[in-house]
Picture (cartoon, one colour):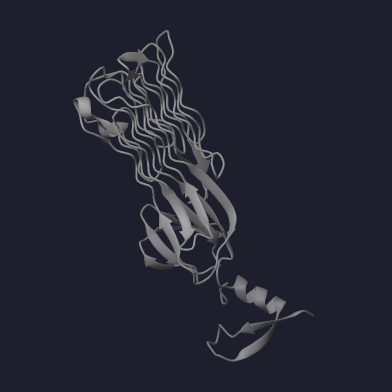
Length: 320
């Protein structure tokens, strides 16, 4: 019969014993002998959503912000006793007013070792485009921002869409929509689909791209990283995955809360709205010990044979 060298964890003695594999399996099953180190874990990384284009001059031409990048990595090998750094991407901001509005992209979310031998990055979403005075094109990112008409050499042109970044880790989301000549803002891209362009005739649909699902946190699917709605008519509702709502061109600024991307889901902001912050979720078997927190905190969930740790702010941990 095969034998295995073990340690008397039950009695707490420092004496070494020889264990049958059957004995080992029974003790693990009875939670008397806890597995040391998770070995391999599943990881979800979502970047921060980009802000929606803003401004009050010619207010109908702002695009929605792109959602944060969405990265799922399964069976990632991790080491015991080595610090792992967790960085959560902030949502992009839509700041200023009138002729000095500025929309910014979302921040990257990162799971890595200090030496970056493990380095998983979800890129922040691109900002939404806007025109006139504080003109800026839609930005690239994990998902691209939606286009808005913007001023180039005193001529009004169609607003191009922001692209979804693919280098170096592959596709993390989809591009934003393109703003058509009707002068409305397009939707930002999401992790599950592209933002919709504006179209004629009415209704003009600048809907943010759909989000993508993942079940690592609770065992049930949660939708993450929806694109923000652009300025279209009628007002666009909150996109799946926490993307902010667009509107129909009102001069209300700053944006109301329903145009913000949802924090912890990485949704893009709607017109004039901030993007939602990202998240990182770690999942591994229940029999493994919890990580040691050098700094920061996480929400713990236990279900089936798994447990998960959800991070919405920066942290440093070690596996034990």
